[in-house]
Every structure is written in structure tokens, then in C-alpha cells.
Length: 175
Image 1 (cartoon, helix red, strand yellow):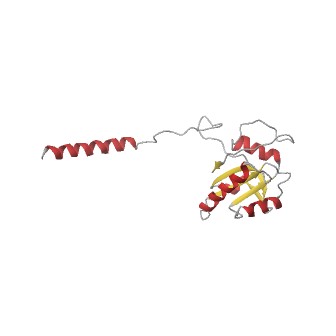
Image 2 (cartoon, rainbow, N blue to C red):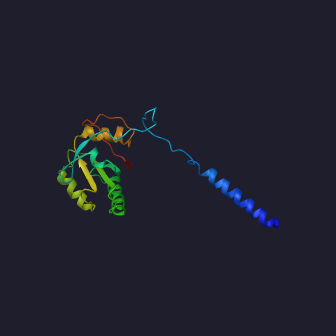
Image 3 (cartoon, rainbow, N blue to C red):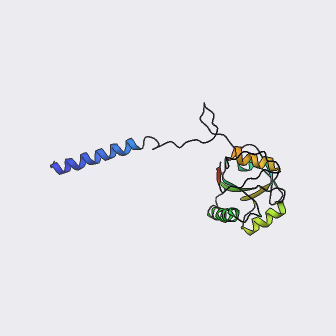
């Protein structure tokens, strides 16, 4: 066999060994943020919740069992980042409209004003499909606890009381 053929064979063999050694595991392990169980290294889950959506239906954490979902925190009278975020969320809704495993939940941080009727108008303005994109309202303390301790979307401390207010530009992923 000519020398050039041996060089090519050895080169290809070296490439294949390099390729298989690089694919034995992940290139890097992504960090886990938030509290973890030290035994399993599993991160926490979204705490149980029960909220009311734009259609007046009760939505719980079980609505999202086995699904991937995008969550955000907004209020309908916001004139800064919320309309921009809702418009971006429309893009997500459109992209995954035919995928039953992807849902969206937008939590109102102003539940005193954002009643199901107000949320319905807002949902219609953003072309939200019921059962696919949930605009929810409910107990303020519960929603604020979800933002801070379940979704880890905001680092500020608060008690969910009358003077507490959350305003964040963060989207969260659940599932």
C-alpha cells in the first residue's frame, strides 16, 4: 500500500477516535440554580397553586403536568416592558400553536385590577388561544411567592402585601 493511503487511513482513524471520545458525555454540565436536593441533585419544582384564568376557569400546577411552558409576570395597565413581553410571547404562541406539549402562563402582579374580564380583553388583544395561553389572577401573596420562590424570576424580598410590587422582564421555563 502506498504511503499516502496509510497516512489517510491513520488520519481517519485518529479522527474517528477523537470523535468518539468527545461524544462519551456532555461537553459541560449546566449549573442548577436555586435550592436542590443534595442526594438527587434535582432542582425544586413550582409549588402548588390555584389561580383563575381569563375564562374564569381554575388553573393549577397540574394543568401543566407533562408539559413545557413559558411563564411571565405582568399587569395589563403596564406601559413599559409588559406590552413588549406580551408581544414577544405572541411569537412563542404562534411558533408552538400546533404543539400540545407547549403552554404559556402569564401571571398578573396586579390581581386587584386584573379580573378575569380584564384579562380576557388583554388576551384577545394578544390573540391568545384559551387552553394554550393562560392569563391568570388570584391571591397576590400566592402569585408573588410563585415569582420569588418557585420561578426564581426576581431576587427582591417582599411579603405580597399592599406595598409590595413585582415588575420583571424575565421569562421563565417550566416543565
